[in-house]
Image: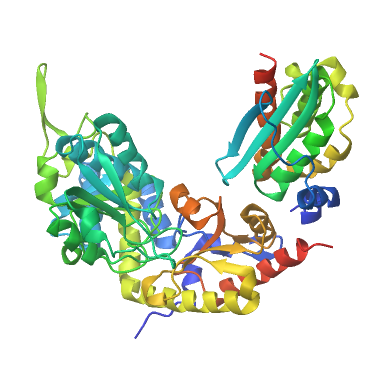
Length: 149
Length: 411
């Protein structure tokens, strides 16, 4: 059985104890809610989109260390990036979680560096926790689609 | 001479499973229970040597199968002291049994503005079907609130029950472990002119049940929570009520006659058993009832009082302020089901460390979100014990919690 250190890498615990970009954004920022029915985790993602960039992102809600640290790392990874790049990051992350089909990947995705997010790779060995790690990302995607509709 | 519970574990083959050189510590029986050899063997034996349809065919094997199936029904009726085995209906699970009551008795007897009283500690299965009836019929729901220590607050009961048509409540909470005063509540319902529906999923497997003494109108419970197989639930109802209700599912077995222009219903219990039932499962449940009866439900309750006392003492001694155990401290009104908050750790993270130690608990909302909100939590950790658990299991839980505490403490 994989060990706890595989799942709870130091950087994950750091983001859990000191989550980045916590808070809310007022309208016209888009607010999207997500939740994990298995464990009751809730998340709210606030997205401000200007000139094709994700100019600001804030996270609120409560959940386990995996869902919260993933949300925190996500917010740091996407803030200030162009939308196309954000979508690429989302695809790369979900592919790391072995969730995305090959067909939806785009050529440029391979060049995307996940940086700190690589630490979440250990989650794959604990299938029950994959939904924790992807909760914020699915919520972000929903928000992005709404913001760019 | 009371039952010796020390070696009961050996009756349950799954409990010998070793993962990563660690024994299995199964503390999720409130969710679903493990099965003893006798239940597994009864089902396998039937499948290997006698599987046949019931109540339909005229050959020997079919007659034998029917005897086993109806024998299980009679055993269940005796187990809950039902006056008549025809009042026991086999369903898919207890959730279906509750939906059956709402969709048949409810539809036939409740109109707009009629009051149904529930409690704040109900499982979703005893809330959601009523919400559906609110939307469909405009019935009104009231809830019995809770005291600070997780019991029902009965100070306003008569007012809540005024003009009520139904009181539907759990006899034991799957989250708090609280044992409610079922007999008292059924009497209160009747005084108010309401029927009493009892969700016995957590109580029936863990203590003696007597529907006549309780004076309930309906009782639902689950096979899989009482050492029987999954895919099978039980509905008990007073004959008078069941006879008057419209049918639930339509099809074979539940009819007396079918013509091109209509049909007539079969007698009880067939009236509520449309289609091919879970034959093998019912036979498995029959074996489970025999197994539990032999041990004695009073003995099981005594064993769990001992377990709950030990567990709660250990948890509070070892963790003090770091642990908040929900539900009553008085063991007389609680079972061995313990939901708790542990330091500021998320239940999911706690259960992860417990899983590393093969300690199986549930982390989540336990299908009781309104109760979770009242407790001020999105989720809790829940450790639930049954007849095959012992003090070592409680020790293993505490040891694993200590590990979780160390692992997640700030460096």
